[in-house]
Length: 141
View 1 (cartoon, one colour):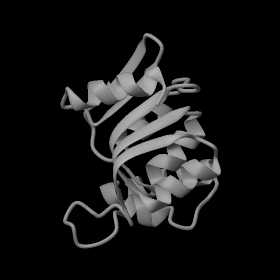
View 2 (cartoon, one colour):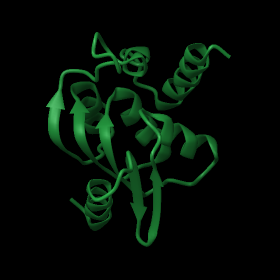
View 3 (cartoon, helix red, strand yellow):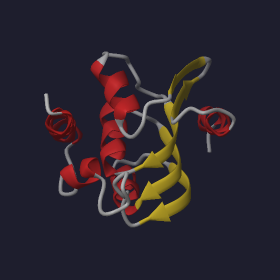
View 4 (cartoon, helix red, strand yellow):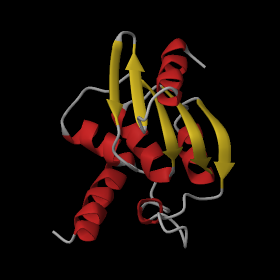
C-alpha cells in the first residue's frame, strides 16, 4: 500500500468519513453515503488523477468511478467481487478487509441499485452516465 493510500485509510478509520482521497498533502473527505462522494467530486470538475482513495464500501459502481477519475490505488473496508474485477482489469492496485459477492441495498434485501445499474458495464464514462440517470430516477426528480 502506498503512503497516500495508508494515510487515507488511517483518516478513514479515525473519523466518521465515508470516503477519503489523498495525493501528497492534498486531502479530500466526504461523509456522504454510497457513491455520492465520487459523483460529487467528479461532477464538480476536480482533477482527481493520481489520488489514492480509502472508502468504507466499494462496489462495481464506485470502482468504475475511480477508474474514470484516474485514481491510483484503492483501499476498501468492504469490496465486492465486481469492484475487484474492474480495478484489476484497469491495473489499479487495491486492498480490502472483507470481500463480498455484491454490495447489498440499504434494506439488505438485494443488490444495491447502483451496483445493479452497472453490473454489465465495463466503460467508466458509460457507467457515469448510467449512474447519473439512476440517481435521477431514484430521487424522483
